[in-house]
Length: 171
Image 1: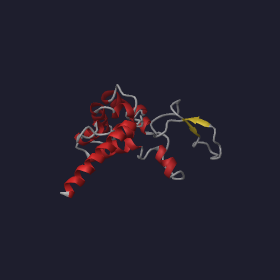
Image 2 (image 1 turned 90 degrees about the vertical axis):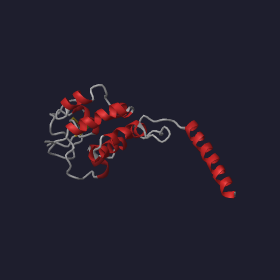
Image 3 (image 1 turned 60 degrees about the vertical axis):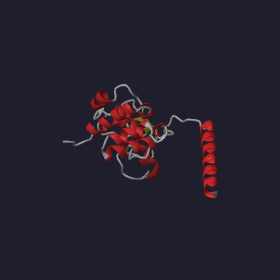
Image 4 (image 1 turned 135 degrees about the vertical axis):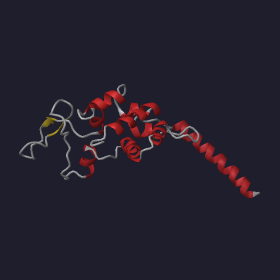
C-alpha cells in the first residue's frame, strides 16, 4: 500500500517538475538544441528519427556529431589540438572571401594578419566546398544551415542522403 502511494506521489512530483521545466524552458537555435529538442511522448525528435531511418551507422554518428559540433573540423582542431598538423584549409578551394582567419600559409608563423581562406568547417564542407557542391544542390538545395536542416525530419533525411553520396572514394 505504501509503495503505491509512493509511486503516485513520485509521478505527481515528476509531472509537476516536467510542467515547470516546460514553462521555464527558453529554446535555443543551436543545432544541438534543435536536433535534440524535447520529445513528443515516446517519439524521438525529427533529427533523431531521420538519423535512425538512414540505417547507416556512419551517417547516424555524423548527424549527432554535426548537431553537437563535435566533429573533426577546424573548430575542433583549433580548440582541442591547436598544435596538431591538421589540414585546416580546404584543399579543393582557392582562397576567396569565404572565411577570414589568421594566416597559416605565410613563411613566418608569427604573422597573424587576416587572410581569406576557406576552412574545413561543418558549414563549408556541407554548403560551400566545390567537392560537395553538386551533391548539396541536388540533396539540400533549400536549406542554408544545420539549424534549418535539423528542424524537420525530411530535411535531415536529405542531409543523410547528401552524406551518403558525398563520401569521398565511394564506389
